[in-house]
Length: 64
Image (cartoon, rainbow, N blue to C red; front, top):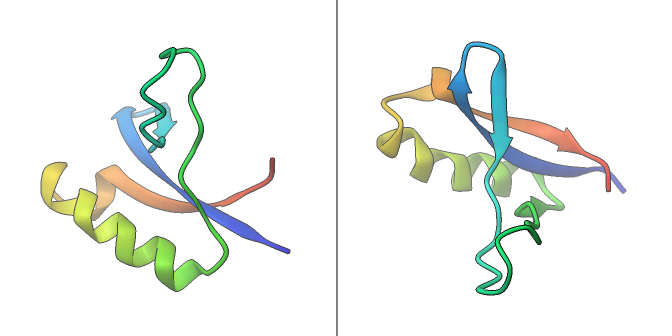
């Protein structure tokens, strides 16, 4: 089954996944993953406001 995740741009060639809050070790980062692209798009919209628009946030296919 195809899954989706949200990435945020740090610089032109550097993107990171939005991760879950694991509240444990900061090295145990787990991307927030969605089974439905529409749900991922809806989640990404919450980040559009924080990062000044769509060009800094994108939904991508995710394989674990």
